[in-house]
Length: 160
Image 1 (cartoon, rainbow, N blue to C red):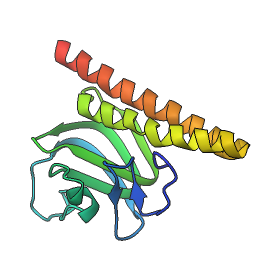
Image 2 (cartoon, rainbow, N blue to C red):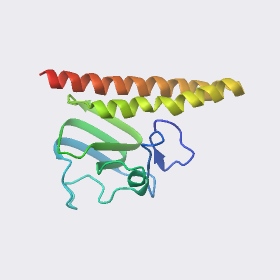
Image 3 (tube, one colour):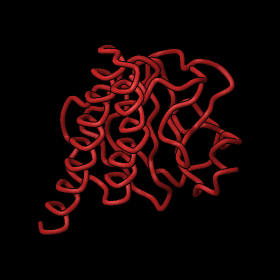
Image 4 (tube, one colour):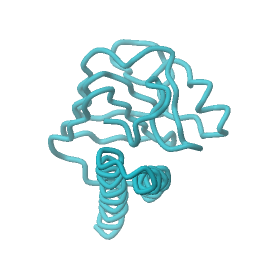
């Protein structure tokens, strides 16, 4: 489920970090082994998008390895390279095992997803709608939990 239910179903993530696609994510992607995020070749072994989405570059985001699929499974992945790894799952992202490095920046970005969710909570309270309020509270908790987990994992990996 996206960070927030966007007005455009082709957009994922909080404002400022939002990534909009030309079509809904499709297919199943499995990330395992080693992934060099600096690769720019177009081959079946390179899951990164060939071109950066316009919404990403217009927001002045860094060149990134963006992996998109309807269902994305991450199993014992070691990502290397200077470019950040961005994973978009249309309906599911499953981290089976082996995510041990985390990211300070990724944690801050994930936690920033709480900002639009707080707005949703405020709207839910104003309109006295249980559904909007419940979804927004869940989005706030998920954003903060994921952000915190990424930061803690990064600190632990630095201490090793």
